[in-house]
Amino acid sequence: MSPEELNRAIEFLIQHQAQFSVHLDQLAGRMDQLAGRMDQLADRVDQVASVVGVVSLQIGQVAEHVDQVSLRIDQLTANQERDREWSHAQIEIHSRRLEEHDEARRQHQQAQSDFRREMRAMREQSLHDAEEGRKRHEEAIARLDRMLEKLTDRKN
Image (tube, rainbow, N blue to C red; front, top):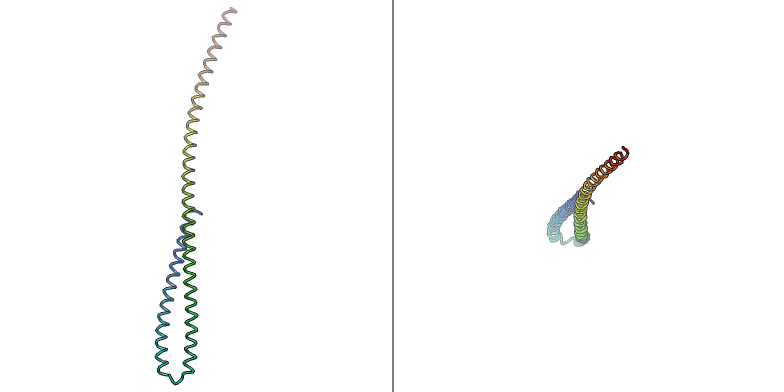
């Protein structure tokens, strides 16, 4: 995964976490509203004490709703914790991968540098060897010319 992809993934996780936090704050606000409604309901129960059957039914329904909301809050809290742990694990994995990538890149750059140095040395050696070969060739030609001259002088 490239650093840009990793950054996008991390940015996505951060945005997701922020949205989740906003939703949790909204849910807390709704819970505050629900708490206010519960207070109003208690006042109404005092006012209509004569209708105990109806009020009992309403209280039962509200209690069930509160239980459902509490269960949902527990689920959301568990999900948030799971997501947080997953995010931390992903960040750790990607951080390790980045470190490995950086090390591999450093080793590759070092290998390239070593290769270039060796190639320059080989080029210089090749140029030197070619120059030495050229000199030996010229010397051999000069010797052959001298030998040819001696042979032609003998025939004359």
